[in-house]
Image (cartoon, rainbow, N blue to C red):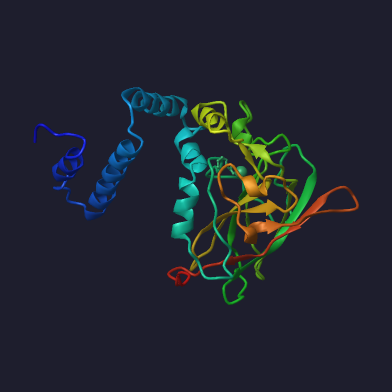
Length: 282
Ligand code: BEZ
Ligand code: FE
């Protein structure tokens, strides 16, 4: 294959990779090549612009380490993360909706008894969180594992604080025999996603802000049910309509109720989708 031009090169690349043994890999890479080439043709990409893109991705690579994942952040702000979540968790009405995982989950968070304070020193206004975990037929899910994480009042997760050894505002709890849970933590507040790197520059260049509405992260696991990765959002948050990563769903918004003693209470009931259950009808 010689003398390829901007019309014929796409077919040439597809032909070159046609020997792929894995049919799914072939489907994905063929589509990727077609769309990348179509994009470059559509915008008539210049060499300088191509190099700017390369430099941007290089900066994403350089800033990424075991604590900072700029590529996930890029996927998040481009809406690719939420698109992928939405098309893979198309559950029947009544099941709790999923949303983005985000980069701040930590494996091996501390385990707590029901009623414990998972803030563990994180600064913020005290808040009681309670609710139930049920299946789609209303059955309580006993001993479901809740992995919970959130930022402090400054909008920072524990893993964003250099030198902090202990887990703060994150923990693992289990529902009781009636599927109920309750724990203490701190009031969720809006915060800016990390924007001191190339993704922040992209947000600035595109006239966007880095804010996420206040939320509490949950990952809920129980035998026989699909793992649920989601958030509960604060209804009074100014960024609900403008989440930097497009993760808000109406059904995930709850009231954080101020109490007479200055603390807050939020209640949310989760409904899990059975493993192998049917997806929502189109
Ligand atoms: C988060 O909610 O923790 C998050 C999600 C996407 C990007 C950054 C942070
Ligand atoms: Fe978050």
